[in-house]
Image 1 (spheres, rainbow over the protein chains, first blue to last red):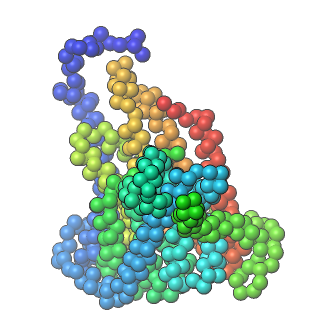
Image 2 (cartoon, rainbow over the protein chains, first blue to last red):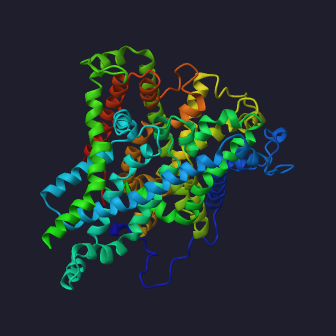
Image 3 (cartoon, rainbow over the protein chains, first blue to last red):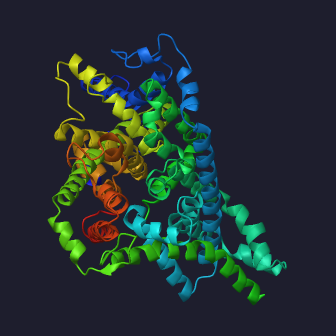
Length: 297
Length: 291
């Protein structure tokens, strides 16, 4: 590579004139092309979302206005009041909040606990237990839903909210993430605490747990995102309407919602997405690193 | 002290390990066992041997769900990888940091929505008569596409909606991969007089190959699990034209109460996923260029 070093390259001299300052026609064309591609991609990504939000504020007569208008001609929140009037929307909200909150909290702690033991007390038996965690990491719920349904039914939990919560307390991926996290904490820290007279419980709760929060936040945000949006398990495990969560309720109760206009259905969709959007706004970094950390092998 | 450590290990491991054992590991084994039985939940299970698998092979609608799913994976993953790689290169080359961060957020956004909700609003967005998409096509002079009433239109719709939502995931992976390529490597290629295409072919792509492999494998595995889009958008129709394997598991099990056959489809899906993972391990040793 050094053999081709161009003559203009002088290590200590002034930087060579940057071709950017006077854009050549080719470069200019390239930039225009790049910008237009970017705009098209942004419109295609946001278009359906903006249309959904905008339509949720329209009157029934206006809901399919073509050509599409960015803002409703006569904005109204009728569709939103209609959602609460036509189905028991608060019940769906209650179920979703309860299920997601309990799953999120228990995944954060079950993963931190087990991840800590795997990281801090390695042994042959531990490796076997950890191998079991890794095996289950690869297999999606869609594949095992029949036995899961049977087990839940055998426990007498079918058609209860616990049917969703209890099987989701452990998390293979979260446990893996927490193990990696605690392995990066120097062992001297725990030993120092022991020397100072702290027992194993104290050592965990006052030394390791405070250091575990950043990774636990990632586990929590991931758990929230996937279980708030989850459709397949509720569809299989919940039979009566009183146990439906938001995504399941929106799909199955569309008929009751859509009688007036699509605006009502879309208002339901927007409301159900709000908590996820809030987490996206404030926890985006954690969510991004959580989603992509699965790719680091 | 030692007893205290033992107690801590027991208490800390139980929720995760016993939980995963009961609700994830046992079900893997159980689906293989169940697939060898006839069971409708009402009467006692009877041993079926390979009957459920033989029935799978003969069931035309199951074949189409298998073929459809393979098609979703092949077309969907190629589209997803191509689009997300293009977007990542585009966003990575942006010079203003806030534009970079903002566009990254936009392309990532659909991932935080529920696939069920996305399918609901896309159903209206693609409405054959009043939808925005067909209106826009008519402006371009393209005749209305029968998104729901023709097999090809419905199939395309499921893929479009799936890719629309999932492109952000592989986009993030590629963007992360691009950020890892050292600036001096690219600059060296530039100083050597390599044009943009040559730089992409000979520098960016080889250095991005580990990311491309992981992104493809993750996209393939999640593609095989496609469910919400065909379930909500088309209910598998028209005919069986958009039926997916997971839809078949759901319908065989919870509509027809044929838990043996439903488990057999699950086992087939499991084997496919294991195969893809095994291929990934082989390939990553042979073809991927690690810097």
